[in-house]
Image (spheres, rainbow, N blue to C red):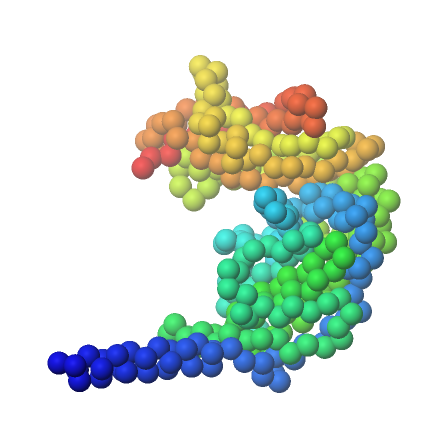
Length: 324
């Protein structure tokens, strides 16, 4: 009996050691994961220019803003044919077959980091002066062999974070995204005054196709009762945008506890009230079912920093309620 216990104990230790070796073997720094780093401009963002950068992100629907307790960051949406592709959990999967991409994410974080990774074992931390780096690669095999990396470049007030998971060890997306991010940041520095005055900068390639007039479109979503909102709006002060939906026959507000919080977004502004900003969101109306339509009134509202609220635009259409 004692021999059996001892044998099991030894086997258990061997299994633990073997598992640890496997875990350690998953991490490597292969030469194929070497990236060239352009001359970065992130250290030119002092506190004032970092604030302008956040203002720029608010006015560009290509960027998704996230404000946490410890840090805030903005995730870049990928653009195809002038339109932003939808993200799943702040990342993209297989948007470019030519690079065999499985999953990617590019973002700018302010002061702290995004906290997307609890385990930072495959995070490569470098400073903004580096010219070349071999990224730490994590090998993952869940039916398909994939190689993951996280690059984090620390600046004085902003950081660049790029995640790439692909079938190739070579970090094609990481290098490409790094060049593109640095170029966009240099434009923000160049057009600092324009962004502060107009809320936007005159570089069209940095934006999705912009509306040239005030618009308000209500599109059918994935199922009846779900709706996608697309709008072009003029705003002359900082504040938030959000939706309200009413039954137009009874004037009863619909799904207010869900719709308004879900559609609330910080918004940029133009001091001259001449720029048109894009507002995109989605919502679900729970009152009703899939069989019967009724007329609803969709309203877009704005609230400034002082709490003053006003309706910007409204539109009516027949809708269904979402049915479980």
